Image (cartoon, rainbow, N blue to C red):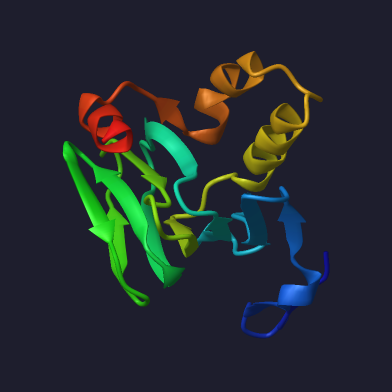
Length: 166
């Protein structure tokens, strides 16, 4: 992956063609900038999901807000006990630290979403772990064992279960 960083001002520029891409088929993740690259300011990735596909299961972060910006399609998001549909290109949502959240592409619409964490979290190794689990190269228990490291704490959400089963 080649990052261009302006030494004098610390700007980070990542060309789409150079960004690492994980996944194939119905879910893809493009990794743009992690906390190391931005000096801890942000972590940024792009998720593309086929219609009806789950993205992240209910979880929360203790240290960072998570921003969702709909590039194309629409996105269903759990925010606390509410399930919100960001139904239009350009819709924007920020989930603060400690708020339970999850996301998925709703039935009938794919989702192409820019996701930004601020301050930045170590996310790229987490996404790589998810990819290895999806390909049978790692045990799913490793995801649960890494909750503290990646500040990604899973929980149950009856509201999310009801919305996704409807």
